[in-house]
Amino acid sequence: MANRPMAPHLQVWKWGPHMAVSILHRITGDGMALVGLAVLLWWLGAMAGGPAAYGLFQDVMGSPVGLIVLVGLSWAFFTHMMSGLRHFVLDIGAGYELDTNKTWSILSPVLGILLTAGFWALVLLR
Image (cartoon, rainbow, N blue to C red):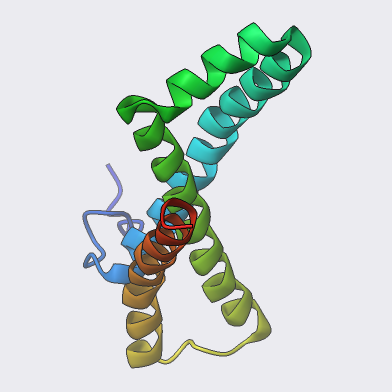
């Protein structure tokens, strides 16, 4: 067998926050697409189904499991949004310096958590 150079892969590269944020960006996007679409379709169907169907939707989404789903969706939204803004800045051509990239990679999910907490504090304490 020929002595070929090894292609860069996950075993070759050292893991860093930028890789984790990139993977988290994909996971949150897929989660919003699947779970968010299911909740949206159920909500629309419940509104079209009348007061009883909408009451069931409200009961389920107001339960602890429903709130976990809604908080998870909002966390996915804010985390995906912060990561998307990071990618937008990178697309412009800024933020490629190692320290800057690492800092924004760490801040993206942290800001997502803070925005989620602020959003739910606003919703629940209103």
